[in-house]
Length: 164
Length: 164
Length: 164
Image 1 (cartoon, each protein chain N blue to C red):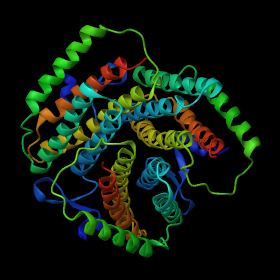
Image 2 (image 1 turned 60 degrees about the vertical axis):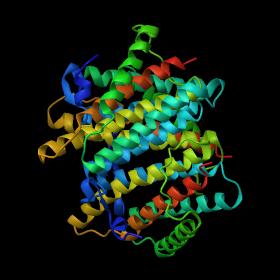
Image 3 (image 1 turned 135 degrees about the vertical axis):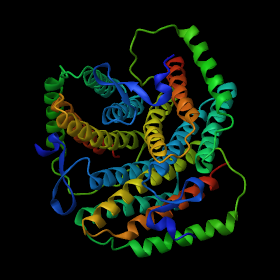
Image 4 (image 1 turned 120 degrees about the horizontal axis):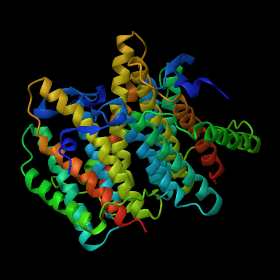
């Protein structure tokens, strides 16, 4: 058992020791939290949507891996395109809704909404990480931020779709 | 679709571009999260309490709107008074309880408790925003902080009420 | 009713007035959140595990109390030993699993996973508090950090145990 973890230190990017309060650890912690929320919504889905949400969880897993390795998220571009196309389909289906909706219709909708707010919380940390990496001339894969931003919109629509 | 959001920038207060890691965005993100939690508790309520929690969600929506506009929350004073009167009624009903209670009796109580902890998390960000606004000579409506503080007490009592 | 709380000030460590955005208040807020999550998992357990999770909630309560008093967490060493022995038992049972698992099998597993991510979020704040206390030559009980670190591993195994 590692003694390090007990003292607030962990192995972060590229196996460097870092404080558990660093932007890197905070970011990975919040993506982990987001994955946990997606799982909570997923178990209420059957069939197609369950598979979609599982893929999102895998994306988040791969994103965490890329951050640890300090390398590009390989599947990033493809997955962003996929998200954009999902969002476009939703847009065609729902148009530009004027009406503001108050969450709280059913359990599934509540959980998708918590995925959406989880995205926002993760994005906040990611932006801090981006700024910190750039300041230190370290690599940051902008596609990760882009994907989480799309994901937030995707959950917004998924939330609306199940608001009934 | 906006390119801005993909880069960690968003439109914040008064339509100014700002980092998604600014105190403003963090505050709105956590109030959004709090609203999502209130929705999760609300769907377990029927009748009167459901309406009360729905009103709280609307309050949080209006608070986010006021923050974006950089203007006073119009309904603030009235809603704070209402909360104070609810808290007073609870106080008369429950007195000054000495006994410490460990959460975990039933699903409703668990969710109200998560609303209470969500209030605390939102308050932390709000205080950061308040300090940042004041440092920059920008407007901050103190009633928003006051309301969230009352709301935290309100959820504390609602939690106790359903601890059975 | 205190006026202080309405202004973003609270009584923190050793009854000192402090900002609700201080590392101290953030830490206690996130431990409170963690306790709320453990309660959510606990209500799905019966018998032995329910008692174990209740004890963890009590630990978190005592930890918050110790932080407020600025004193040692009395039960710390014993509880860390207990956690280490639980983790060891899990290790013997599960070995060193190579397979990565995607959360989302059942409600109990989802909630234990949210306890685990809650530990990580609490640890981040605790490390900030530790650094801030040390900088100011104030007492910080390292056992608290150690316990939360063990707890995170304990929830990891509990999550795997219920992944079915």
